[in-house]
Amino acid sequence: MTLILFNKPYNVLSQFTDEGSGKRTLKDFIPVPGVYPAGRLDYDSEGLLVLTDDGPLQARISNPKHKVEKTYWAQVEGLPDAAALRTLASGVDLKDGRTRPGKASVIPEPDGLWPRDPPIRFRKSVPDSWIELTISEGRNRQVRRMTAAVGHPTLRLIRARIGDWKLGNLALGDWRNG
Image (cartoon, rainbow, N blue to C red; front, side, top):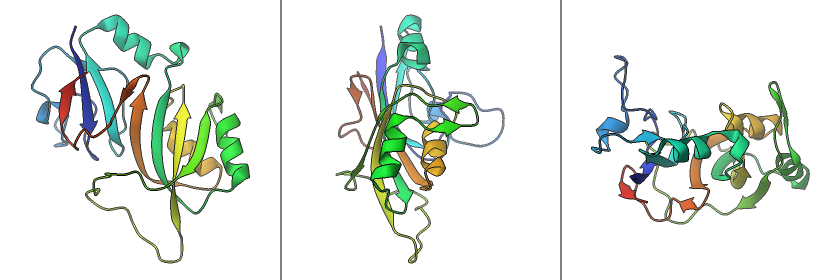
């Protein structure tokens, strides 16, 4: 079995092929044949992506019925209060239903964070902060929709953990065997 941990940069597709859009894909970073992403990470999100050639493992990681926890660091507009954090943790009502309960807390900016290219928009009049959010689903743009629903839109999103696999000190655009 092959298992790869990859630190996906911003504006990279979580797939190996591109139908002529000119966007960067996994093939620009990972020269290992026969592996596929276990789940997705949005084009405009960064961080940990697990790739494997093991179909059952891929299904276990990506299928929400298995409830594999994923931890994200989200740089959000504003300073979430206790009520917003409680709502994020207890479940948020979205158009496609209520999210499962998870964990949410305000954190300092993560250590060793690489600069994003391009940088997030900065506004003097609107402070920003970081939250750590752990969920066991993987709906389309779920973390972004959750933070927006509690009044704190996501400016930057980094996945730090999938199950027992952690991003750790893996450099942006690098991969290692898991």
